[in-house]
Structure formats: structure tokens, C-alpha cells
Length: 250
Image (cartoon, rainbow, N blue to C red; front, side):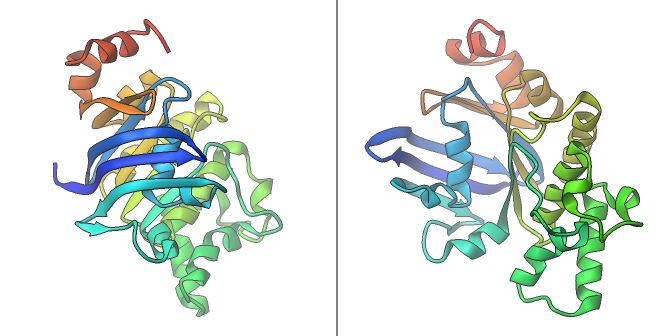
């Protein structure tokens, strides 16, 4: 699989506490990469570094290279980076006091889209991409927070997709959802892989096996092993990986 994003010698700190140690990893294009590992191993910090959200935390810093199609994203203004590398968080977070339409349009407005037709088309395409259009098309003026939890999460995915990112980061996107909503989000992830590089953090190893094409196992802030889904879950090289995926710890 062609490489879309490459991480080179990534280290990260919160104050004086180092939480990531020299991680180098290639993330394939048009594929889903699952970042797995026990709680506290650095998974969320890792994906927050990929679109420079980590540096927004007071006292946080990182070192290393994040390359997107060979371009180092760690230099310059982070705002364009977050358009190219979108993020969906653990809990649905629709913008309060904004309609369904305006939640999706917010990113487009940030990019300078002002004309009604362009906004309408962009919102429509994003909601279709997120598998939400048919459910909300008749009440786009309703508050985003009026939707169910699963719908809110797909609304947040639509919001991220509206700015046409090249990479989509998903940090435990199903952890607060019921099984029916989880199945819908997982099906959506399966469709998104046809157009984007998707990186998903999950504690759920069964989910990781269902949705991923590749996987990377982190432990205590270090990359233990990465490879195809089949390698990591069925033929791991490292004994630590084997113990983790077989439920012996974590």
C-alpha cells in the first residue's frame, strides 16, 4: 500500500514527563490503520501529534517529523494542517447552539466559502459521505445536539469531511455509542477507506480486527510492532504483541 503519512522519530512530552519515545511509523493511503495498546500507552497523544493538537495543551511539546506526502507538517501554521488532517474525538462534540447545517458548514466558512450554493453543496456532500443525509435532510435547521449519540458522532465525522481532508484521525470514535450506532460508524469507516487514509485509536481489539487493514501496537510510549492486520493479530513477531492481542494483559 502506498504511504500517505510518515512519522519519523516522534517524541512527546507533557511538561517534563516524556510520553512518546522515538516512534517511526508509516501510515498507508486509502486504508485504515488501528493504533492499539493498553490505557496510558500514548495512543491518543500519538494521534494528537499528527495534526498538531498536542501542542495546544499547556506545557506540551513534541519533536520529530510528521510527513504528509513528503511535506513536513511540524513547521508553520497548524491551522492548514488540521484541514488536511481531520480529527474525530472520543465523545461526539457538535458545536452547541448551532444547527445541523451550520455544524457541517463551520469548517467551510473557515476556509472562506461564503456563497450559499457552495455551502449547500459542501454540506450535502459531507452528510452523504457520513451516511447521515437521509436521516437529517428534512430538519437541517434543528440543533446538532438534538440528534442521537450515534448521529452526533456521524455529524462530527461529516464536519471533519466537509473540508476534504487527506487523512482522518479517529480517537475511540465508538467508545460512547451503543452497539447499533457502533455498527453504523464501523460501516462508515469501511467506506471511507476508499478515499482517505484513516487512523483509528481503539481499545477494542475485536473492533480493530474488523475495521483495520494495518495496525500498530504501542506500549509505554514506544512502538513495539507494526504491520498488516493479519501479522499483528495472527502472526505477531514480538512476544509482547502476542500477549497483548491474546488478552494476557491490558
